[in-house]
Image (cartoon, rainbow, N blue to C red; front, side):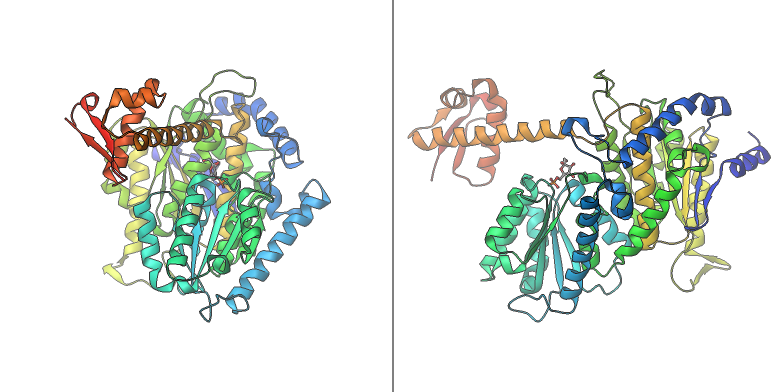
Length: 529
Ligand SMILES: O=P(O)(O)OC[C@H]1O[C@](O)(CO)[C@@H](O)[C@@H]1O
C-alpha cells in the first residue's frame, strides 16, 4: 500500500473517544473488508453474550459464577439490589478507611502514623495494584507501597529488609480472594514473624482483602486484625483491580479511585456498543482474531512508550493469558486456545528484542501504547528544537513503520496523559476486549483449571517431602536413594524425591547427600538433626 492509501486507511479506521482523548489505531493490521464482513455473525453473537454477562448470567459455568467486574464501576447495572449495595458500601468503606489512616485516626500502636504499606498477594491480587502503583503513585504518597508477590525467601528478605526500620509504622495488607493461596499465606506468615521479632503486634498492623468467610477472613477476624475488606465471588482475580483488591491500596497511596472508576465506566459505555467499527474493544478483538487466525497463532507484544506504564505489559499478560489460554471450548472440544503476551517498554526494548521483531520470525503483532504528554512542565532541549520526549515519540513511530514495512502488524493506543481516569479506561478497554474475544472463540474466559492442576501437583511434592523426612528421621544409617524412596512409598517419584532432597541439603535442613553428585542414583542420604 502506498503512503497516501495508508494515510487513508489510517483515517478510515481511526477510533477516537472524545471524552477520554483516547485514540485506537488498527490501520496497521492488514485485514480487509471481506474479513470484517465474515466476522459479523460472530460479533453479533458476542455482543449478545456480553449483554447476558453484564445482566448477571452464569458466564463462568465451571465455577457456577456470574462475571461482574463491569458492575464495579457502575453499580446501577448490577443485577440485584444486594450486589449494588455491596459495591457501594465497599467503596465507601475503602474511602473512609483510607481517610482514617491518612489522618492518623487509624494508627499503629507504637508510632504516630502509618508511613508504609506492605501489600502481600499474587497474580490478580498483585499485578493490578503493582501496575496502578507504578503508573499513578504521587511523588509524596501518604503511604509508600511495597510488594511481596512470591514465596521466594530471598525476595521476601529484600522487601522486609527495606522496611526493617519502619516496620513499626508499616500497615500490612494481605490480598487473597480465595484466602488459601500458599504464596500470600507464606508471605503473611513471614511478615508476621518479622513484626514479632521486633516485639510488634502483627494484628495491630494488618488488614485483609479476601472472600467473606475464607480462611484468611477467619484468621483476620479471630486474631483481631484492624479490618477486613470483602472480595466478591463474582469478581475474578485478574479482573479485580477495580474492586477492593486494587482500590484499597490505591486509596491508601492517595490515588483518586473515583477517577479510576469513572474512566472505566466511560470506557464501558463506549465498548458496550454492539458495533465493532465504533467499539474500541471490538476493534482490538477483531484485530487479535485476524492476526492469530482465531487460534492465537501470533503473540501479542505490548510496548508502552512510557516508564510509568511498564507493568501494564505484565498486567495484560495475566489478563489475556489466564483468560484465553484454555484447552477446551465451551462445547468440550480440545482447542488449545490463547494468545501469548509479552513486553516491557519502549524505547528500551528496541535495544533488546526489537531486532528479532523487525527481521526475525514473524510470530507476533505489536501493541504500542503512546502517551502524548511527555511530562508535567517544559522539557529542556537535548539538541536544537528536540527534547528527550521527541526522541521517544520518534522511536515509537519509527519502530511502527519499520515493522509495517516488513509485514509485521501493529495496533497503537494513544492517551493524552497517564491519569487515574486513563488507567481505569485502559483496564476497562482490555477487560472487554478479552471478554469479546473469549466469546468469539467460544471459551470460558473466567476460570483457570490449568493453574489449579499446578497447585495440586505442588501440594503432592510437599507431601512427598514430609514422607521422606519422616523416613530419614527414623533411620539411623544412611540410605541409598532407591531404598529411601521405597521406604517412603514413592518409588514412582524418584526424580521428584531426589530434587526435594537436593533442595533440603542446599538449605541446611539436616539432609546430607553423599556420593557422586553427577550421578544422583549413586547417592546415599542421611539425616543429621
Ligand atoms: O487471590 P487469590 O485467591 O490468592 O489468587 C491469586 C491468583 O491465583 C489464581 O487463582 C491462579 O493463578 C489467579 O487467578 C489469582 O489472581
